[in-house]
Image (cartoon, rainbow, N blue to C red):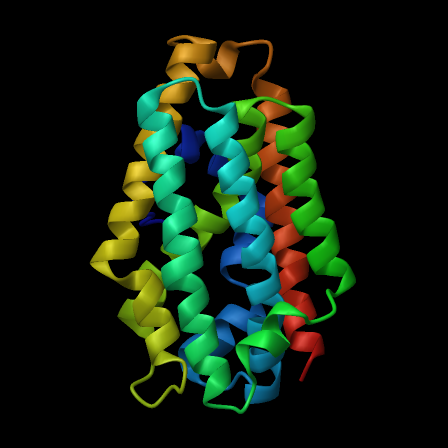
Length: 229
């Protein structure tokens, strides 16, 4: 896969710095199963339940990013992410699960799998123990990975896949615009904090490690989904 969506210069550096786990994440068997329709519905529903719980914590992490922000533009973008997660993305999960007889209360009170705990607490710890860059580097793989997966799968999805609406949501113009907005915000944040040569900054390896570790945890999340089959 070489034709990546353009979500900004910082993300391009992060993705290149985490090439192996990024490939494992965005081309996971779970993702392939979404595109060709061979993913068992039981695995998809198990993933959706866990991802709903994940999104609860993810929204909290983006709310923390508002606190960590140092500019009004950062605050606006992060607040928009909280709104999109709480009122749009989580609603997609609710509607999909409702069709299978799973209520929203069941989703909210679901017991977290170990992979879910590891990922969500890693992101929150990045924000609580670090600064704005620590937090957005840990948040970025989810935002951009789903955008990249959605953009790619939209082009190759089998017409009869039962997961077409999920793919369409992340491949949509609206979600792609969101990725570009977040990417631009991160580029500006990096410029302001690390200067015009961020990759050469002393902090860069640490920030890269945040992104890489979160990407590895995304791989585990897909594998957790498959385990539910």
